[in-house]
Image 1 (spheres, rainbow, N blue to C red):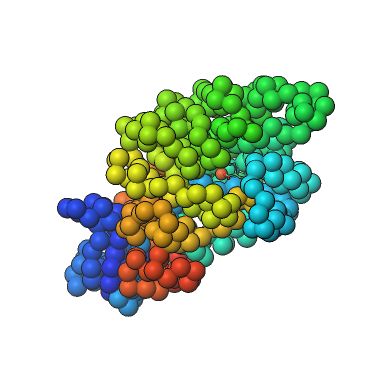
Image 2 (image 1 turned 30 degrees about the vertical axis):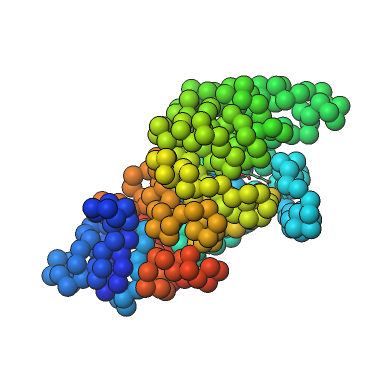
Length: 397
Ligand code: NIG
Ligand code: FE
């Protein structure tokens, strides 16, 4: 099937032109052929280029078209509800990683079909809000059986699945509760039978390298074990305080280190000199009342920065990339253009993908028609549903 989207007032291609990293074109058109973008150019010459045979024409009516959002960090396969924890936090309680265990209990108790139905709901939610590529992590199973289930179910909805068996130490390995094993015994399980069970379903390995979760030494074991099985490396780090997550991620050539709420000058310099993307997650600071990281510091140093939702029931229960952009612009020092780049091409870089996040010939035909004349409206009109149409691989969702 061929579709011509034409009469686009502002087209964001993310193909850098002169000094414009968004590669904006005005009065533009895009030809979709099957699941790919076949041509990008001037609306006036579009019909002559496309020919009208078997062509569906979509009139963008002068509005903006952007690449579909690439959400490189979600945890949307889980059971249960933690709204009471959120309410308590808004009343003054601090966020701790310990809440993860209540989701683990609810997830273990859920059937495959219950988890599958919940996941399908999140996929619809993501698509409706313009997200066309998304990553999903395991990490609420924390047993061989349950982590394998989560990896398998996530793989039913995305190619970008991450093994996060090292999310926290589950209660049965917590020696402060008098259990038989300890954290190192749990890491033995993660790098052994759990990785064996999950590896066939996943592309990435991740670890929560943080006080209260896994030490740098334990984190290194997990990441090296995953890498030795051919998995790409990503890291949760520097979320709750300063630490070794960034250093470890850069040393191991991780595609991305995520959170980065607390960065030293050395961390910023390491990121700027590396190929590791720094993925910021504004929903987390928003819903944990932690300080927002200063994105200007990273951008001015030359680091590659992505934005993602971190959609999860504890620290950030939003699936809206537009919301993340609005917060990033309002409170983290991004320009609207930088934030959009980070939520599209930046997310693609964090997933080591060059076929998404851009509207260029050959890329996957993933795009979003906004009910707005410019991408700036994503930050300018926070909370307003501006996504008019979402196209994934050439199909309107
Ligand atoms: O990315 N940092 C660790 N994991 C999640 C939080 C998960 C939870 O609280 O359930 C995060 O913020
Ligand atoms: Fe996360």
